[in-house]
Length: 188
Image 1 (cartoon, one colour):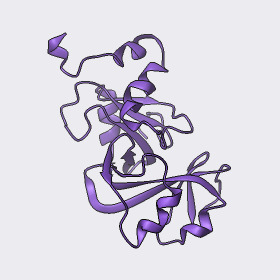
Image 2: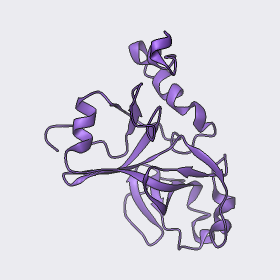
Image 3: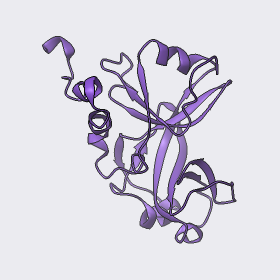
């Protein structure tokens, strides 16, 4: 990892102003971080898009708001499902693969009825955010991202539009102040 802390299961919070509009004021939940790169999903960008057949059978498990989220600019045809299990997931199964604690990735080819007793909710993301070897570490070192601990329900927040500010606010001190920063810093 070139001396940087592993970010799997943690949040990347974009610092304003981030030049890339794909990531301005985003909160990314990191699914994997190894020497060959990192992968995560943006957890605060609901699209308003609902699930179509055959995935509409997952609607009953979807967390509010029941929308597909824009997970990132990479492979926007790919769908990634994250589940909030009712107990920590430590071993992979056919249905669930552990990420951190009670958050696991869910196999969308599985019959959701099989997961109904195992998970409290599911959130589905279109696309993901990806970084090549050393790229994320460089962006963190340059100050583009804050690496913060995830609360258990961040990924499944009922008010995702408020997540960027609420994650910063709960940090206290100068980071809490950043939550009130205007969208256009030159207007300050």
